[in-house]
Image (cartoon, rainbow over all chains, first blue to last red; front, side, top):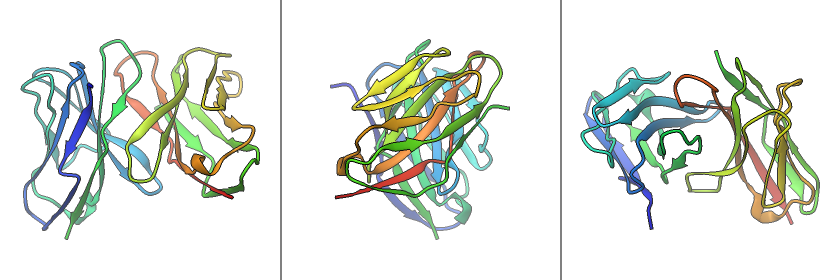
Length: 112
Length: 113
C-alpha cells in the first residue's frame, strides 16, 4: 500500500548540532509539506515543495532548510539545532490540484 | 492573512453526550474547510471536509456545515464514544495561491465511559 513514512520517530540531540529528519512518500504526490506541532499553536508550516527542485518557505522557516531531489523525499534539516526547535514534526503530501493532505506519523525531536 | 480559531480545550464529556467544537475562520474568497483528527501517538487523519458554502461534510457520525455568512465550520456529533477521544483540528485551504493548510490550535476531547 502507498504510504508516507518519517524517520526517526524519536530523536534527542544537543544544541548546535545539525539534524536531518526524513520524509518519504510512495504516492507519487507532487506536493510535500513540513509542519511543526506545538501546544497552543496547532500545526505551523515550515517549508513546502510543489515538485522536484522546488522549495518554498512557510511561516516558521527560520533555522530550517529542505531540498527536493526526487518526487518521493523531502528531508528537513535543522542547520544548528536550538532548544526552541523541540517539537513534534509532521510531514504531509498531496496530489497536484487535490486539496486533501496525507500526514506521516510524526517525529518527536528534543533539543537539549 | 488567513486564520482559524477553535474553541479552547480540553473538552471532557460522558459517553453518548452531544458534541460541538466551534471553529471560525478568516479568509478572502471561498476557502476549503477541513476537520482533522489526531489519535494518541499518531499523525493527523482527515475526518471530513467541505469545499463550498452550505456544503455539509460528514464521516463516522461527525458533521460540519460550511457557513459563509458566519465564517464558521463547527464540528458536531450526536452521541460520542470513548473511541472519539482525540485532538481535533480545524483547517482551511485558501481558494487561490499556495496549497497550504492553515490550522487552528486544536481541541483535545476526552470521552469518559
